[in-house]
Image 1 (cartoon, rainbow, N blue to C red):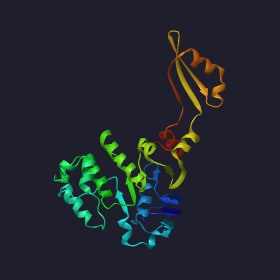
Image 2: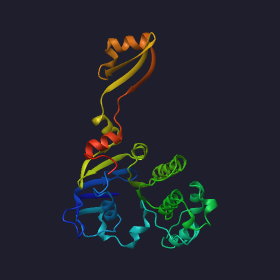
Image 3: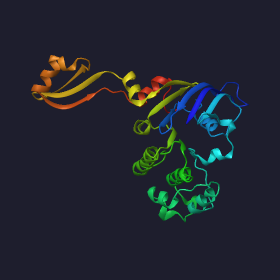
Image 4: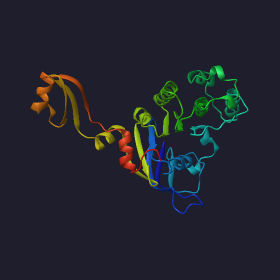
Length: 284
């Protein structure tokens, strides 16, 4: 869907580049995570890909053609959910959606979407009376209202309780299953773990690492298994290397003769990978 090559961008008032030679591809039908601390260029990259920023160097291709060659029809194919919801607060949710529907040739069934995200009963309420979470869910519905081919989502579950976050993630999965493509930026690594096929970590305006979630966990993880077991009345802990585990006599003896309390592999978390790859604490 997108091919980005050596993308560089500097805001006019800045001395240094915000994006510094970024290269990546987004495949059709995948959820691609663009991750990194605040200020490394994630949002700027998204804005270039949705044609909000133009004065960049490098190459951005959409479906094989230079994105600059596309006119307004490009916007018929994309859905955008920014982190900060933008609504007309004096209008109701329905009035907001009906206004934005008029900008597109194709329209989704917004009543169905409002029901899915739990806003249908509040559809005739002014958005100014909505909570932060309700505004976030309405923002998500708006991103889908033109039946887009590709979704740009920035922190789509931010501020949502676990139940509503689950609904939003389920809709993203369904969108992908139907052939849709998603570019996701978020600080919530659980969302990345669950949704993303591949992820790119940005640091200092560059791509520091790009791969599947599984491959990154293998690359940065410890190949060990921790085991807790009862030894008479005491609780013992041991750690074993995963390599040649089946031939480790001590490990085999423990699992055959002792009562096992817990056992788990030491797979590293995406939070740990985030900090290691970007060199920054996540809450930046």
